[in-house]
Amino acid sequence: MLTRSVLRKAPRAFSPFLQKRNLALHEYISHDILRKFGVDVPRGAPARSGEEAEKVARDLKVTDLVVKAQVLAGGRGKGQFDSGLRGGVRPVYDATEARMFAEQMIGHKLITRQTGPAGKICNVVYVCERKFIRKEYYFAILMDRENQCPMIVASDQGGVDIETVAAENPSAIIKRSLPNSPNLDPHIAEELVDKLGFSSSSKPKAVDAIVKLYKVFNDCDATQVEINPLAETTDHKVLCMDAKLNFDDNAEFRHSNIFVLRDISQEDPDEARAAKVGLNFIKLDGNIGCLVNGAGLAMATMDIIKLHGGEPANFLDVGGNANAEAIREAFSLITNDPKTTAIFVNIFGGIVRCDVIAKGLISVVSALNLNIPIICRLQGTNQGAAKEVINNSGLRIFSFDDLDEAAKKACRFSRVVEMAREADVNVSFELPL
Ligand code: ADP
Ligand code: MG
Image (cartoon, protein in one colour):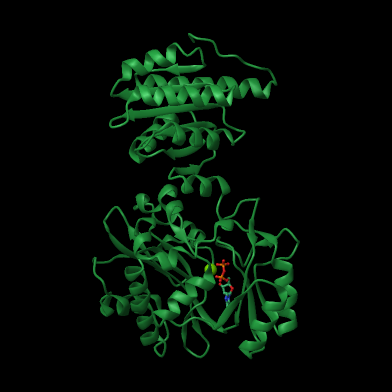
């Protein structure tokens, strides 16, 4: 799966926040979508048990097959299962072998360079025909948000990790911005196919595949159509061996048939829970929990925390409706993460009044009986009343007007808690600090 480092010049398109908000689909579903658009992919079908895998393999009536773990991560081929099995993409030679590998994959976690050590559960395998590849290419269409247009990223060094190619041999990556149009001009595809070096007999098929992949990107409101490898086979066919398709969540209402195929077993349970209640929540590596309304303010809050030497534990946008229920859910999600050492609440009271938020905050904090400091900046309608309510609450909520000062305090308190935890001592924050 392509990440930010490949397109440094278009960082917004690769913001982890924006990517994670997208719907990602399993390869076997993505292949079905490609088939509907007339794009060539290997024949195959999903299986949820060893027995099913054996049946699919028999029905395919070929003896060269591959069993592919369906987990939403890149690098499956080089991954390892917690069962000890090496490789999430295994060539097999008959239906019995397909069953054997499927049984070793299903119900186990696959760890790849993209999943982290926790891995991702494999509940489904994709049994498909094994094709003999002459050359592997990398091909992707993405939404370049900076230039507000689609963009092709391609390379003749496909199959392998594209990030490594980008790091070691950046000139091997071709980037091409595209005009915003419902169809791709075939001349653009021809130009690209020439540059990539497809054999002359496969060129028209490669052009056809690229034009159709663009149609998928446009018609399905995709944010990413990544084919790695786009393969030229020994008999000069052009096939999409792998497919990593992402879709814009904002277009869900137009593609409910696609969005029902979301597999939440592949998502972080906290993030899935947040999405259900309308919170935009993404876990990060730091320890300062952030509770903010508005994505822009949330980004700015994370920036200012980093500026003062802190590390945000999450991105959390409670949205326009920062009511007590949303705040309760947000606090519960933030405090679920044991590494949280401070919580920074930064809310702008526009339509929602600050004193109402303050009351919600107090009821949640007192109910949760938290022992980590809460730094709070409520600005906007009724901010004076909000401050008074907080100061009179007797809770360890530290209220500030100035963003810079609040962020500095959040970082300082967080460090104190961190040090206290390291030394295994209890620290109590008393006003004023
Ligand atoms: P991932 O990118 O997650 O590792 P891929 O689907 O790209 O998974 O598979 C890894 C490699 O396995 C591909 O680069 C390709 O060489 C090979 N491969 C995948 N599917 C097939 C197939 N149907 N036939 C032959 N080789 C395949
Ligand atoms: Mg791949």
